Length: 205
Image 1: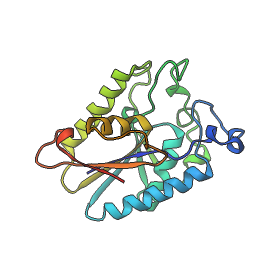
Image 2: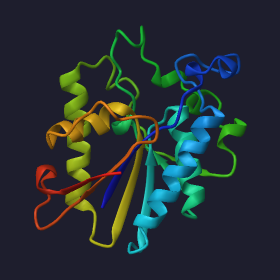
Image 3: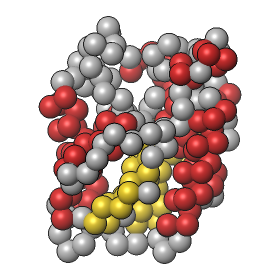
Image 4: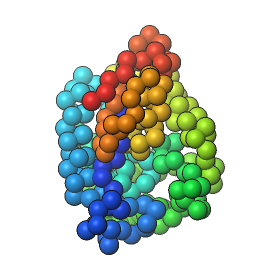
């Protein structure tokens, strides 16, 4: 089973929280975003009771790490792996330069945002991805999810805490609506006899 969870509300969408942003390219969660993450974690907790092995992976962007930390607390996990494969879309129109080297986790890993959780750094070479096109982003996401489906065991569940684009990519594959992928939206893929993404059972929460 694979869960994909979008991060909670980001600070640059909240006037009160904007002044506390450490890196404009890497905003933190708002209090509302934290509440949304708690709700997502509670939902996932109810869905994973049958799985003996649960792993949490997160985009290295701060809003995702914070969301993953909250979800982890809900399901009694202490570790989160950081994966560039599920990071933000690195369009040049979004970022004038590669944002990955300057993310908060890569410049200040001892920040209080990261206390209480063990982060396992499995990021790719930071210069391998930027800049991206929609085609490259789609290929990155699909390749990684497909790889997971081929390797996870029946008793294993992987939770991917990511951004809006990965969820939209999966929903588009299944010809589902993509206009309601709000903060902390959750979808899941359950593989059957086939490990192909399109042959999985999609569930939208």
